[in-house]
Each structure stands twice: as C-alpha cells, then as structure tokens.
Image 1 (cartoon, rainbow, N blue to C red):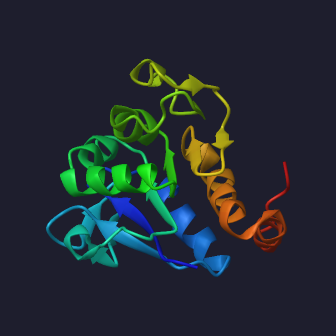
Image 2 (cartoon, rainbow, N blue to C red; image 1 turned 90 degrees about the vertical axis):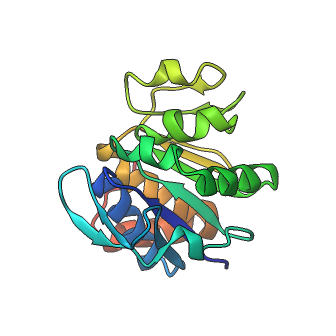
Length: 185
C-alpha cells in the first residue's frame, strides 16, 4: 500500500486532521502529515501547534494512496492557495486516485478544481453554494470509491473510518472502530 498524505495549513481544524492520522495509523496505513508552510510547524484553528512529518516541497504525490485535506478556517483557504497542492490534487483526480476532504475543504479546495463536478459530496453547512456543480447531500460523510467527503468536526471519526474502509475494506474499518469503542452506524 502506498503512502497517503494529509495536508496541513495554518488554521486547520485539529480534530479533523489528527483524528484521520490516528485512525489510519491504527489501521496500519502509511500516512504522513505535510505542511504547506515553508517550515514543518503548523498552527491549528484553535492554536494547537503541530510539527508535520514533512513540508510540501518534499512530497511527490504521484502514486499516493490518498490525498487528504482537513477543513477549518482559514486552513481550507490556505490549502486552496497552495499551488503545489492544487497541482497534486488535479493529478490525483485525473489519474483516478483517491481524495478525501472534510468541513470547508470540499467547497474551498476541491470544488474550484472541478473534483466535485457531478458527484455526490458533503461539506460544512453554509458552504454548499460554493459547490454549484456537485450534488451536496447534507450527510455527515459521503464515501464514493475515489472520493470521501465529510461535513465537519463531529464527522471526523466516521470520515477517517470511511478512508480506512476505502483502502482496507469494511472488516478492517470495523475492527479499528471496535478497538476504539466506536459504535457502528
């Protein structure tokens, strides 16, 4: 299994980012946190400082298992402003690779790139108008074969488990959930 990358920008939503990394690592998946800043230190929306595993200039996203964008504001706006990330997401999308985004990120990061066009997705309430070509469901999590979207912090666990299921199957996702005392939906 290839490495997945979760991108961090100043103002990221901590629960959405760190829950995903934790759950994926519990499942045995290789996931690296990537700062889109010039340095590895990134400050979340609630002033939690995180040291990313690497900076974006060190990442070659080709062949990645997943490219993952947490939300938070202005984190999602800062991710969208990163040209290198936009290029990686575009390549991943056009090559049929897996992408996941939660909260504001589906609307702010993915929609302008055309990644949501004609697809079911969800996003943070109030951002739907930024996704005019998507079928926004309003569900907490929408999991398609190559796209997982979540609507916000409360959906972080289900979002993370959907990513695990998308790579390792339902049985593994249930095993990880059970180990964390998460009740199945």
